[in-house]
Image (tube, rainbow, N blue to C red):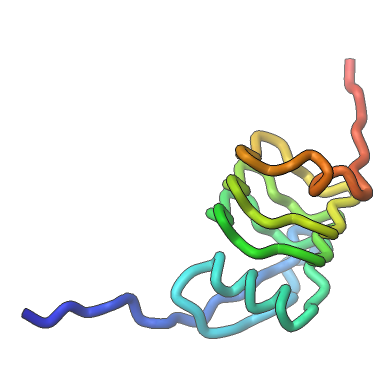
Length: 112
């Protein structure tokens, strides 16, 4: 029996504001592409990562300021030293993330 693995595909990470491509690479998953971008120190501010499965991702030192992470799964992701200033975390899953990891730059607005 021959088992075929997932093949790499071209993945683009775009700005949610302008739809401009921020980063493009070959990867099996969006999570792998995001981790590559972070490792290469690509600025992911304004990135549209809504609904992304980033569980267990290494996002340490990532610039995710103003990124759209709504409905993303960040469970057990490493967000140490990540910049989440004004990031949209609406309905994001953040299980088992130490609060110290998400406080840097976190801005909370109370809406009546």
